[in-house]
Length: 122
Image 1 (tube, one colour):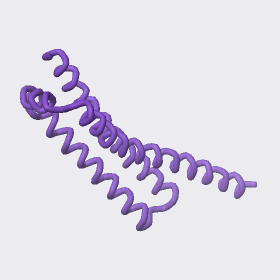
Image 2 (cartoon, rainbow, N blue to C red):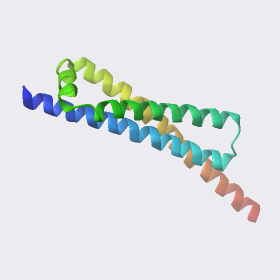
Image 3 (tube, helix red, strand yellow):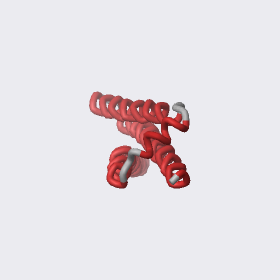
């Protein structure tokens, strides 16, 4: 039982860290995208929303990482497989969707900008 709990605590740390990394990357690519397209109200609000999501993930990361291992261990012992699945879907899926959409938009707009620059040069 103790080995199972240690694996689950490590999994919780991994899920929270991955969520934080994906949220920060979504903010970075949204900011890069705003530089390409020009910063206006919609992009500023989108960046602010993504930054708040990243801050929420950072706060959750801090609440899990900076708590004693024994408290996290007792918390994890109450988790079921359903709660692990739900946590994984919510904590990873939302930042992953934000990151992938910002990354794709960044690629599309960057390609479009280079096409228009090439057309202008010709």
